[in-house]
Image (tube, rainbow, N blue to C red):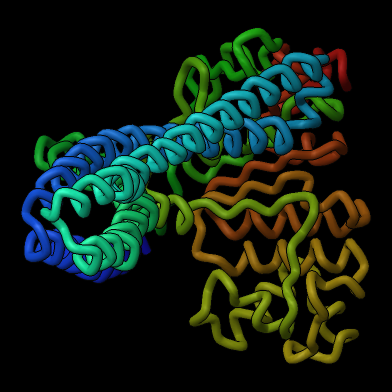
Length: 447
């Protein structure tokens, strides 16, 4: 996309530069043919305007890069606050989060204003290169005509060159070309950053430091080493010094009251959020260093608000595994309990409207759970993904994923899920307890 942008900008710049430079040279040549004494001061004004223009463009490039960075910072800050709104409220950090957003908005506004001021500097180049020569000519013409060094016709012709050739050329070069040059600089800067990152990745790979990530087909282990995370430097920690090890094929259940940080932990496990301290390792590799395509094949997350898109039941189930056969669908549906729903809907070719709006919440969750069951992922994270199912169906689904193999992490509000786990993590804000189901639940104040 950015390469295409560079191609379009370069093409447009070449066209406008050709037209503008030709018009500008034609005006200077025309003036020289009329009277060389007229062309020299005009050429001096154009040269001065060119210097000013280059300075303005250089400043405009820097301002636009700053504005782009400020806009991205604002978007990241807004996403961080809004996506973690529940944790922000739970931690009592509303004022802090609001102050962070206000600062990001103010920085973006200031950067935009500085860009506008830099763009206004182009007017000076137009005045120096287009209007100042015309003003000088209007002042000089009466005296030259009176002395006989310039005829009336020559004076009219010189003015015509300035008005119809020079001024439009200067306007076009400073306004249009200046904007496109600044945009080209910003895009080129981004491409250089991407190329530098790619070179560093290649260098890391050559040095044996590349994090290729686990084999998506092999269940990896999950390790958290001293993980601490908070939303902002002054907020209370959501997770504080968490140590946890789940072996390949293990079954971990995370429980705790609403707002305790369970969904934040999921985002840490998947690498969506960076840790403040400590590391999250998947198969011994830091999760944020695993290439996205490998991570997406390895980990499947089913959130509480199950996503069902417009289309058939078959298309929804095979979204993560396009080569699934009818037999694979039947086995998955039988394992999770979707087979009864499938028959009620009219088979795999039953169609859903946008986001499955006519389906009950429990049915949407079953569809999403079966989709994850059918996927090739060796790590499955269920983030309260069965909260709309009855206790029997929830137990059936969890047992299906246990038999499926791979590493299973279940974030649950019901303690029944914890009793079926190999390990239980109880979260209550920064307070946590890890161990076997019986011991942890018996000792936890949130049981």
